[in-house]
Length: 295
Image (tube, rainbow, N blue to C red; front, side, top):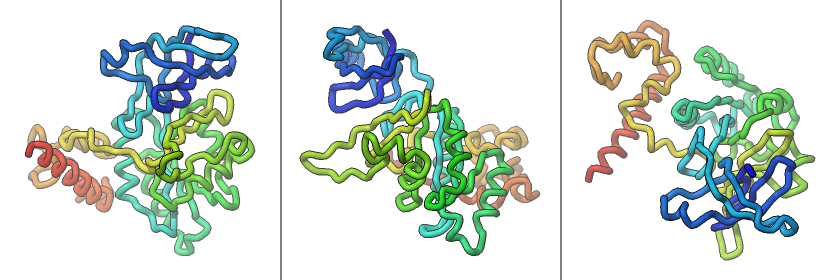
């Protein structure tokens, strides 16, 4: 029988099967031997040991379409990046890092500009315009006033959704504004757990609509992009890709080289200068991490 891993606490797994029943399961010892363990989001084959008490054992992990190392998640289909229009000010460098990560995984990314009611200068309009031009879906929200939440809810349907964003951008408020009646039955989602003897940081999938899930990842506000190699970074900037073949040198880093297709596109106004500047910062960060690993 097949099921979906919706929670993992230590070596115990909660498995949801097709009729929405939840079984508690352990994993076969062979997984440890093969140095692979089930993670939240995995689709698995299980053997039912005790139907009455809902006990099972995981026999196989089905092939993963997506795997995230930190936090450990499998098969997410969409990442929603929440950016505050004000208080705190928009962190576009972090946004670009997270968009790069979505491109690396090969999944859809949605940008949510939250707290737009606080942005008296309407800076969010320029941000929205720039990222829509690249090809991203950008949704303007006011979580407290439930503006834009219905549009976001529709985009989340039939997906395993993971939220990302810096502290203070309003992720929890946004999620509760959309799904409060469903979420409060089991507890607050995306809460910041305090670390201590009797606290948990377990990752969990909440089903908030038919075949629609939110991944609750306590302790992780953003995704770690360190597994991306600096030499590959440019291809994860969507608008850069078409200009890479115009570079004179194979293996062009697009930083210092002459006759670089991407730098020419920046000069010609085809790529936004600030977005290119953030690419350079991310490239140097990744390069420095790679150099440190050699020591």
